[in-house]
Length: 331
Image (tube, rainbow, N blue to C red; front, top):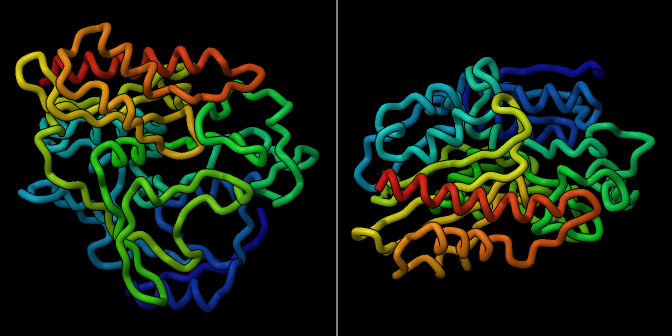
């Protein structure tokens, strides 16, 4: 790890000024669980870190609102996951946090930082001699002809097939969350679904944030869909592992009939993936095991497997189907 300078910001404006003036080598620092990890493997090498943990209100959150739930970007994952209203009325959000990382990391990791974690692709993190367009744009993608068991089957490109690794963002996409950000040019609000970008020809550009913009808060519309919801995650081991396939599902039902549905996929795509074809196919239908499986197939329609990951298409469809049946029970 290279030496770096450290500064602690006391106000939002001071933090933004410091990062903006510092140039590309200056980064915001919250929990640090993602950034330090990337620094250790050489994927990130900031010259200066601006600590934002002292900013007023950044760590607070409020799940009691009638119109929306509000989460400060600096709130810790474990604190939010244990919130009683979230556990009872929005289990998809609580589940997504509990099933991420380890308890020690959840105690430190911030919600905003969690959204911005980068891929676990071994070629990206391994560095030379492997080619990676995320680390060195234009160098190539070693995963395309390499061991791609853990790589994306949705949203990939010739330049990159690395999966987005997070869980929390997938649940937020399912519930139509938005993200409030601030930068030198003022504040703006980004739909959660638009925060992350597919790689296309520029996989090094992973989000719609400017370098000197910081996430202030995440807002989730209050909805009846929250109660009949779940985040179902399939992985190689039960704890502290990233998803081979995951599904965030939320339903509004009348008896056995689906009146409204939300489905988002994790672990299978280059960004959190909203499965609207699956949602449309469910509305107005009785939610049987067969209907759930049809929705799973619809969610994976268009998937493009590589050399070693075709099994994840079937796994993804089953994951969606199982998540729908869990959510039905909660309804």
